[in-house]
Length: 234
Image 1 (cartoon, helix red, strand yellow):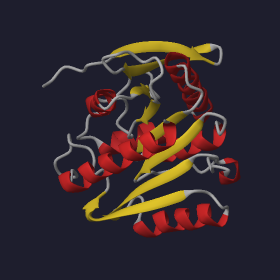
Image 2 (cartoon, one colour):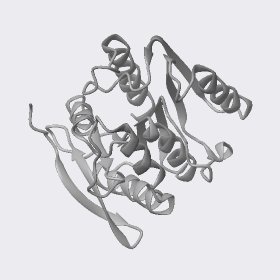
Image 3 (tube, rainbow, N blue to C red):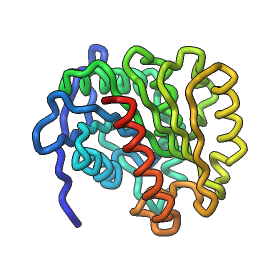
């Protein structure tokens, strides 16, 4: 297995300390566009760190906050992952997310960032965009879930452009749920585009899960997302 290119860092998080994985381009992070990468319910696993590495290779500075603070769940244990997700303390997570935005802005010297998230991270990407409209200008939720009953984003506060990705065969974030999100954002005059991958299922971009991975869809998501970030963060 190829070693990760980035490094683990700590950053200020509203009076506490957050942890993250950071990957930077060869020339350094200064004046680059910054991308926050948000984990699935497994935690900050190798696949998320490699996604950061891939963004760095494409010229972005990528930072993935560790929302489970050192804990990860094996990819073979979805029940445990679901429990970890539902046990996430949203006040702490919100502080970590906001602190990650500030840390990325500090490192790049740019006030605006992009956010991409997968599964629960896709839902949190939308949450973060509504909590930090001052900073988040492009958000990419990929089959994003918001399973916490007391967490409902106020989309009226959203300033970011949205590129949403959904799978045609997804019982967690169904195509109809994706279309309803698009309709809601459109009603609020938000800039939102939805892509549905007809042949894919939930978690189709996770190459470490062969039972879910759909290469063609995953590569198309990557191409669309990177172009979206280049267009809206440059």
